[in-house]
Image (cartoon, rainbow, N blue to C red; front, top):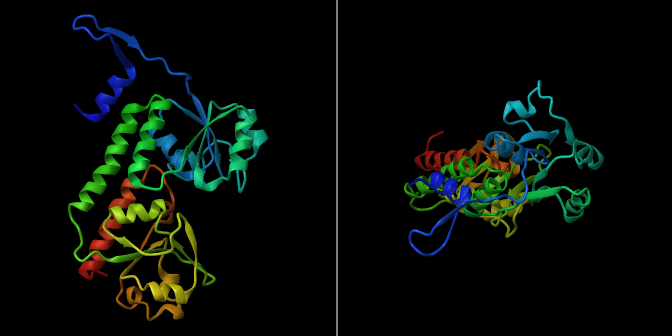
Length: 288
């Protein structure tokens, strides 16, 4: 039996009674029906719009741009957050649920949302495995168990495929967010993006943190990764004269991946893992 079908049966039917022939089938009642939601991060807008078809997205951030129905030029979904949420606007929309990326908001922000009397679902996983579990928990909450199971399987299948085609030796990989002014950022080894690239076959190098942090040229040269994956175009990094002796740059082992995929814990994580694995394989093979 597929995981999707099994989850659907588990959440729709609850079996009680221990003696054969005396089972009682009961409908499992949810504590609350979720029919509308506000998303306070681009990644969660992706998840709601791509997986939770029974939920109406009634509010979003100014940065939400995928799928096009959410953030396209013709989108009529109200913007409720720029840098910070507009709490009064959120309250006026009266959503059943607010969904957000836990890395983007502090405890005070979350407390203000809860003070509105609105439930919160927070995505805050630091590993791919935990993200899959969060997806299943979210699916259970919003009556989208089948869709959640299919997506979780899709993500984990990409990990399995990457691990079935390993690089030997495993390359040291840095994940960099290039800065136009010369201040570059590096993903910490404990972050979610790092675990995605680790799952794709890279040995992540960087500081022991769970987010992107500034790194100067001297520190990056000291790390001297074999390969670099950048958030967005790598051109600024490649053309930084301070880094011309960096092994990954001098040996053309730098690849850029869309910043939306690199920085979002959303509905395209499977694609990011697959593209990271392909990038690492291509760099190992010397492809330009």
